[in-house]
Length: 102
Image (cartoon, rainbow, N blue to C red):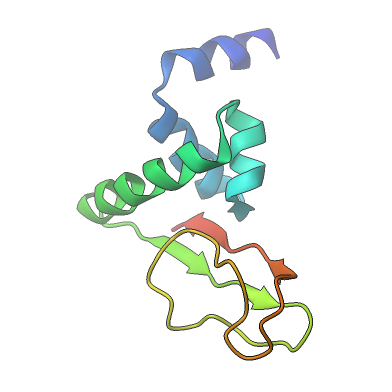
């Protein structure tokens, strides 16, 4: 375990994000906790991760947010950040988007 922690310190934040998302689907909050950075910073890095993975013939896959009150799915949303409220019911109880690298 100690070796694993040392290995992660040698890798950049974006490399760590790619490694984590290659193994499992995660939300920005889960990524921020795993890496030890603020959630807002994760969104900045995700934009660059999407570009760098495309150059490696991989893709950053976005599983869109969903309103937990009415079930609306934010399918057409292009931004990687989580939405503030539902356009249909105006509720703010939303499932966070999740990301995966394949």
